[in-house]
Amino acid sequence: MQRLALVSVLILWGSVVFASEKKNSYEAGGTFAPFANYRGIKGEARIIRTTAKGTIISVKVSGLKGGLSYPVHVHALPCAVNQAGGHYQLDPSAKTGEANEIWLGFTADKKGHAHSKRTLSHLARPDAQSICVHDPEANGAKMACADLFPKNKFASYEGNFAPFAKAKGADLHISGTAQMVTSSQGTQFKLVVSGLSPSEQYVSHVHLFPCSVTEAGGHYELDPSLKAGEEKNEIWFTIPANQTSFKTDITIPHIARADAQSVVIHQMVDGGMPKLSCADLLRTDSSR
Image (cartoon, rainbow, N blue to C red):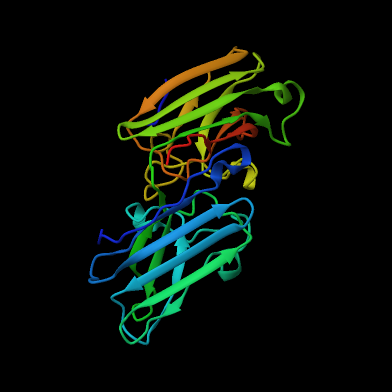
């Protein structure tokens, strides 16, 4: 069985360019809105990702307390999901902290206005999904948040399966494609896989990171606030036993976030599920 279980501010959007390695190069942004218990905070956030220049991030905020310095960070989830989650990590395998995150702290002027801009050589992944302003007078509580969404939120994604370093023997020949299409109705997944060994058992999941980043990281979670590791809170594709190939086409009511970045095929063995092959879910549409 296959399981898966705004203050208005004008933003000028740039062109969205997607092709080959440039599929994750685009401009995105959103408007700041206060979290509960805060009022009057507004502004805009903008991110530009380009394979040539890296990442440019800028924020403009008003409604702050004049003369106060505010922590500001890029976060890993949208504002409405678990209050934007934790900080985005440049390298998810490295130690957390300023050197491995994107900080944009600023000091508000007398009118309560503030702005900040950073340029990084790092090409931010799609899981850089929001920017939060924190309250320095309340132990860093999240005050306001802006989503970093492209103009067209719904899109098509696809990638080709390639083996991980741990794959060996017949598993080196696993190939195929993974496709993901998001819409207001949910998310469609299409997998076409060949080169499986009929003597082995496999399973596949949607993962958090690109294939090259910590071997795709952990499983994507429908609701990150729930306990990790529950199948009903993840997106699993059951691959029948004794097969050399596999196809599936399913649609789930959940709208996948930008942190659904790859599909991994695992081998099911006693004591674990080693990762064998991975397909990045790279945006393919050219809509503006």
